[in-house]
Amino acid sequence: MTFKKAVGKIHLWLGLSTGLVVFIVSLTGAIFTFQDEIRDATQSWRKVEVPTQPTPLLLPSQLQAVTERNHPGLKTAFFMLMGPERSAVVYSTNAKGEYFATALNPYTGQELGFLNLREDFFSIVQALHMYLLLPEDIGGNVVGVSVLVFVVMLITGIIMWWPKRKTDRKRSFTIKWGARWRRVNYDLHNVLGFYAASIALLLALTGLMMSYEWVMKSVYFVANAGHSYPAEKTPATVDTLQVVPAAREPLVDVFYRQMMHNSPAAKMLYIPVAASPKQPVYSIAYRKTLYYFHRDEYYFHPVSGALLKSIMHAGKSNGQKMADVNYDLHTGQAFGLGGKIVAFLGSLISASLPVTGFMVWWGKRNKPKKKPREAAVTAV
Image (cartoon, rainbow, N blue to C red):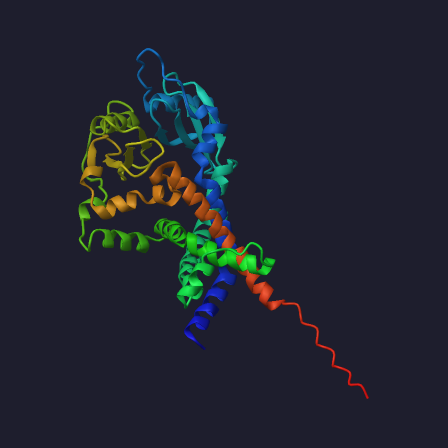
């Protein structure tokens, strides 16, 4: 068996075993790419009008009080403060552990929208993309392994497709639309797969960074040229033997004030409620709303509210910045609208590859049998 035939066998059986998962993950990824734009167009409550007169934003504790008054039985988990032109969102849980999102006007406290995230379309799409709606441990591993296999398939696919002769290359880069459907399908699989390979690899690798810690560590190691920066990787701890005075105001307000003081240019804040007096509260200040790259990270004491540790964007290593930009790369938004369009098209083509590949395999197995030629009758 030649090398290319061996690669072909690997490509075939890996594709048949993971094709359905790759199709689902790629298609849901394409749908999720423009989720913020679609939400903004269909959920008017995501944006608010800025008052003509200078008006301070409400504190997190005030938003929490409104939410828990309007929805008895829900317990606040964390806040997403989205900036002066967007509603603030309070995320809560009920006794069953289900999550809800309450959107509030950050100037008046008026409730603008309420979502049960189990019924939210894009939350379902995201869960399907990440876990196939299975338990997270099981579904996450199924998706992760399938994406790893997809990376191997992209590489083996290029090896199989690459033309031996220079004269064949031009023909290999085009789709012969006028040919029979089997040939068109074959070209769609090979040509589109080649053109989208680099984008598909980027999407796959950034997805794997979210799925597997060893992938994230590998990228961190390479980006830092093998250097280690333990200060930015080690979380703060709480000295449980030390007696500290409780904060004089609600803890979430203490966190908010310190974050705005240290990160005055931040537009979006993630602030969780203290869950345990033994665990520090990890909060994030983002430079730009709905973008996750430029972030300052904070650890606060869960009783006193004192700042235990901060990791500012400007002082981060290249490896940590690569980790921070991962989500924006995965969705394409790191490069603006153009990047999202490219990620969307790359995801759609990735979703098509298992389909066209299966049709190539099925077509080869079910070729119409040629009728045997009738024997010529010899005249006597």
